[in-house]
Length: 101
Length: 209
Image (cartoon, rainbow over all chains, first blue to last red; front, side, top):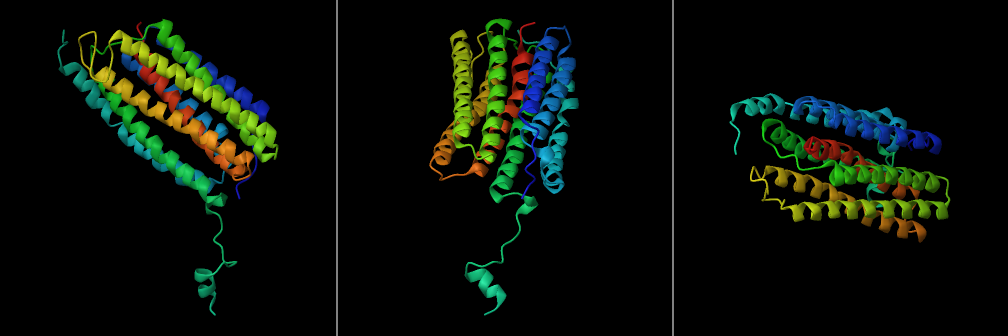
């Protein structure tokens, strides 16, 4: 059986507050005048941080056996990283076409 | 009678140990979450490709009401994850009444999220946006990607609410146990986790600046 450890409700409330704050930071960054590509990168990074915190604490992955973590996580990350191959083509397409009216 | 005969044909003591030290339903849920994460990843990467590669992509979300609505929806869904944690902790402690109260709170918050989302959709429809229409005259890809992604997520939220109702009823009648509450909780946290990507990439990236 998996370990019955958990962070405790007080810690969960703290983590919840942290996630709410990160969401607030995302909204603030949106109106700071970044370019599309810079904003996309920043929001992606913050979303990944939020996802990591949610996975570790809310979904208790931190307290599961390492064998489960190593089975589930690496191949998902690998597939998502492979999907990152689209960016050079997206930026190339951006500079190819002319603006439509 | 051989041991293998007993193991294969009768109830026996030759049980396999739990995979990864967890119940098989929990492992199944993790594997489903992994596959669903890749599905959402593919959809969001496809949208991000379009967004990054289109210079005149529409940005129709004004701070009020769209971004404010999105912020409220994010807060509601994050809070529902917290109440779901309360339900799981109460179920582990064997407190049925508390578990059901936390589950009820999660169901209410999930329903509220769905209502706010559908209200946002109708606001978009009223402005002329749809899967195939762009009232600003440009590419229809914004509507196609927005309604597809948010529709897929909304479908997950509604399914999650229904699952929580079933688990709540089952737990109350002792048909289901704390492990079912925990497994359903995993799904609910995943739905919240996906929104952590959908809100910034779909709403904030298309905010009117």
